[in-house]
Image 1: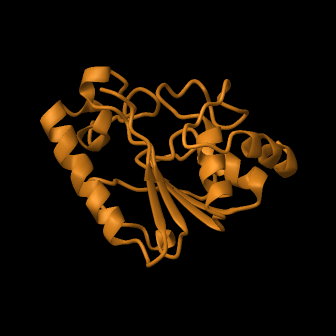
Image 2 (image 1 turned 90 degrees about the vertical axis):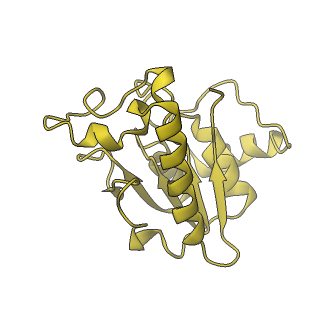
Length: 174
């Protein structure tokens, strides 16, 4: 999508309540639970982001948005075969924050939902022949384990922010 067309649409939606009737042309709608690229585009535009980092990159929505907006991008996902370049294979539960995330203006996260929503990724959206990835797939964790792991991840990434940087977390209703 053209940068100027994206910005024109965002200017019309500049409000404290974001509402977009479509998810946009970004990412892959086959990834259940993924968010509209308009959310990421709005944050990038509103906060004048020059380097966007995304944890839980999934289908590559953030990558696609950044490409169209001409913004530097780095992503991370549990998927051992990320769907876009510049998406690192990272286990957010056990790994440190990737060095590539440092110096980002914005860290964006739209974490998977817990086991109760029944949207597993490891072994479903991508292969997990040894079942090791499933152990760190938030989408396969019972509520208490999910919340504990997610809190640890959020604090680890929050602590990595540099002064003036922003963290945005999109959470669905459980």
